[in-house]
Structure formats: C-alpha cells, structure tokens
Image 1 (cartoon, rainbow, N blue to C red):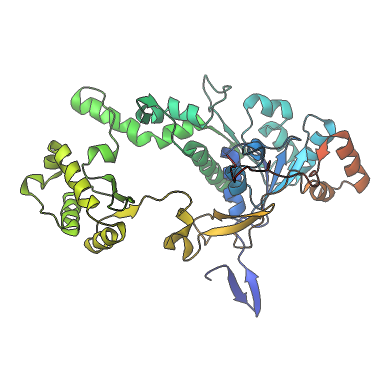
Image 2: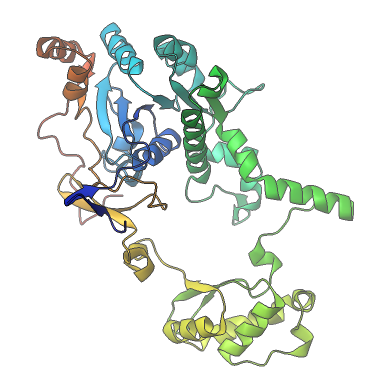
Length: 421
C-alpha cells in the first residue's frame, strides 16, 4: 500500500494506525504532553483532551487565540471541557478513566494530586490503565519543583554553550519538551505491548530534566573525555566551530547554503566542486584547523562567486553534503516535502494550515486528518458516550462542571495589517 488507501475486496479502505481502537486521555498544556498524545493520535489512537473551562494555555497565545503549537499538535483530538474541581467534573473524569487505555499528562505534581490525576487514583478505577506523567523533575530532591523547557536546558548544560551576544540563551524550538513527548509515546507503547507486565511498568513518570540529561549525554561524556585526556574540563565545540568550512555561507545572490565538511575527502570534493585548488598545506583536518581563518576566508570567497542553484548542482555532482538554509515560510514548498506530500491539510476556523505528519507512514493512521477541536467541541458527545443523559449534560453545563464552545466567538482578535504576532 502506498499513498493513503488500499484496495481490499473491491472496496477502498483507509489505512488505520497501529493504535486504532485505543483510547488516550490527555490532560496537557503547552508542548510535552500534547506532543506525546499527538504522536499516539498519529498512530491511530483516539485522544480525548480534557481541558479546564478557560482552555489549555496554547489556545490563547496568539492575539488571544490558538498558536501554531496548538494547531500542529492537537489536530484530530477531541476536546472535553471539564471543571475537575467540581464533583460532577470529577465523576465524569472517573467514568472516562474506567474505559480508557492511557492517561497522559504534564500537570505539576501538586496540581495532579489536587485533581486526583495520579496513578493510584486511576489504577484503582482501571487496573490496566497505562499512566504517564511528564514532570519537571523525576525522583530526587527537586521532584516537587516545576521546570519548563528552558529551565531544563539551563540545568543540563545546553544553554551554557548556546549564547547570543555572550548571554546564555535558550534554543529556538522547545526540543526537550518534544523529546519528552517522544519518550512518553515510546514508554506508553512498551507498556501496551506488555499487557501482562508488572504494574510498575504501567506507572510511567519522568522529568524534563532527566530528558535533558539523556539528550546531552554525548556532550556530558565528551567533557569528561577531555578532562581525562587533557587534565582540564573543556566543553566539546559544535561541529561548526571544530571543523573549518563546516557551516552556512552566503551565495552571490544572497541565499545561504549549509555545507557539511567533516573529512579530508569532503574537503577535496568541495574544492573540486567550486573549482579551487586543493592546497597541499590544507590537506588534513589538522592542517585546516591550524589555518582556520584562511580556510574560512577561502570557503566564503568561493561560495560568494556562485549563484545558489549552480553551486548546489556542482556540489551534488561532487558528492558534497549541503542544503539551502530555508526560512519557515518556504520549508513546505520544497520538492522533498511535497513529493510525496509529508504534511496534511488542516482546516481550522476560516483558515487552512499545512501541518507535517508523523514521519513513519507505515505506522500512522492515514485517514483524513481532522482539525484541532474547539474548546469543549466534543463535550456533549463524550459525556453521552459515558452514559449521561441530555438533561444531566445540560445541568452540568449550567453548573459550570462542563462547557461547550461559545457560538460565534472568533478564535483570534482581528489582525491589523495581517499582524497576528
């Protein structure tokens, strides 16, 4: 089967993901938990996102409305808007847990206990539940503390080496949040595969801090290596700083090309591609490091004499690893992104978005992707599925224990001159 459908017994069938039929409850905010359940949804699970009456944080980050984070990582989910501080809201939550396969959240430890979103509470309702809590910190002296992505970057060494004008700064994307979501999905899948395993395997708790430690393992081990070889702590430089000629360079018409220059063979291929002499005294990486300024000047000058398209063709023919440095508005226009298409069309409000898909198509649900839900869009349907009658549901909404979308309310404040910042 290729594309999105297969023929079976004369009927056109949509491919279903490996988690089809599984129900996941998400109590998530910002990125870590929503990203983890986004992956599970892409694999075919039904994700019911429980939101408080004011909605999840990323619903309100851009002109009072949903951000790119919300649209990208909450598409196709169902929104059940409950007040978990009300007894009726708690009762609905308990009913939902009783029939679910997974609960995944990133509430603070204190909030989780206050709202009853703990493994002990959920497993008492459903002994087979897979429970996953992404915390700020795992077990240890800081386990009750709150940590966000940049806090984890700062605590695990990432931020120290990433500086803007000399000031330690966070990376652009929230990579540790997203890695934590990936780890959560992996752990949930492992628990679902071993349904007869020990209860401890179904109680998954880990921190953004521990995620950051694991991601930083190469650098943390590298500094130990330098300490033992050189007798002093020395942070491993990034490849850009360690390898002359490795990085981004500007072409004649002002486009940027990123060149990978790791080996002596790469250097020889580059010289051949840009038609410059491969000087004998720059033949080895050690030679080029000793003459860093000269190499950098040579590469900058050589690249600046070419237009991007001609240079890309020459480098491709010579076997030099490279790509154009693209702005975000151009990424999904690239041929590799479009053929076959690596993203889905996601309608939302009066707009339409293109959102990249889970990158392993053989595992994911290839059914048409639904839009992100409005706040409480599936509240009535989910409560009815849990056995509530229409009068009970209406009473819960009137009492504030549950909520449905506000009819006619715009998602974003009207932009002036197209500005949604």
